[in-house]
Length: 386
View 1 (spheres, one colour):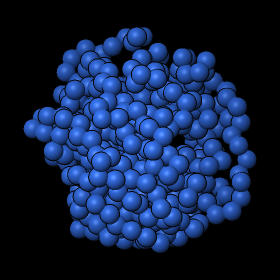
View 2 (cartoon, rainbow, N blue to C red; view 1 turned 90 degrees about the vertical axis):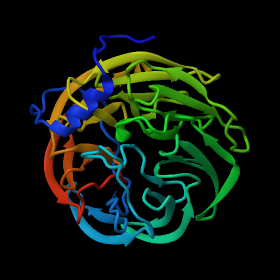
View 3 (cartoon, rainbow, N blue to C red; view 1 turned 30 degrees about the horizontal axis):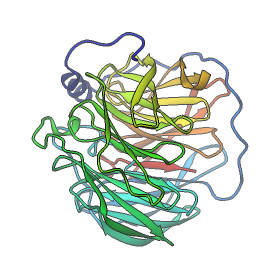
View 4 (cartoon, rainbow, N blue to C red; view 1 turned 135 degrees about the vertical axis):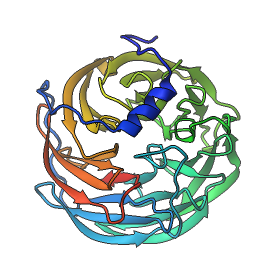
């Protein structure tokens, strides 16, 4: 059940207008205390950003210093090309999870939307080695999900599809019978609000979730068999006018989900039969709220149309979302990632290709400590940190 107010009007028009406007936002405000972040585990610390360059996609590597500042350490070709959806301004892929890090295998997965491929890199500190470039099983891949040895790629065009793989060492093995069409309207416009937004596992790996954004306003949930094969058909839950976009897991059977229609962060329980139930709703008061990242009980949404990040603290298993205020960013706030120790938040801004660097206070507020350029980074999308 949906709780809290809902913004009226046409969701697609709202998102398109706000992304084009890219308005400025208010400064950060005070917040409610939370538990202290985990201590740094030591070793190498890095941040990786995907340029999504249509002429030749690259991953830019940064070394993270102890104070959270980033120093560029190198660039690595993906062996593919980036892409741009029609109508996109700040986020050319209009998705979350286009660059995904698998800590269990020390692998980095990058989509090459313009080449319909996925690149697999081995990771050692801030160094990458390209291991494989493999077909995505569809057109215009935009998101990658990993759980144990199972990997799924979300393709955005031709009505959308997911393609499943298993890991064999540092290479992907594609399963032809793990491909599922989403059946979205391939002609719906504007393209960037009507393509699917993300594929991701629930925390226990038993279900795979896809957001359709304005093309249905649905959550599509596939059951995952012990073999890793997805169910033949998903369980569909409609969220009218929500434009469901990005999400992160909440426990074993739930997600924290952004809704770009009402510009809100929500908590959604995923039942064992695949039915999704919204149990908490918190408006950001910003525009084009599309991405979300978690740091313990803290959640931060990226608001592309307001050039801002909004903070929330989750309690009572996510059934309560307490607003912590906003922090301003460079134009076109999109993907974000947090350091493994929870002390730093890195926010990719797509208009000029800049990573804004923030320190995370014990009360959840953000303090900007610097910014790092992404070479030829206008239109870049995809960021991970550890």
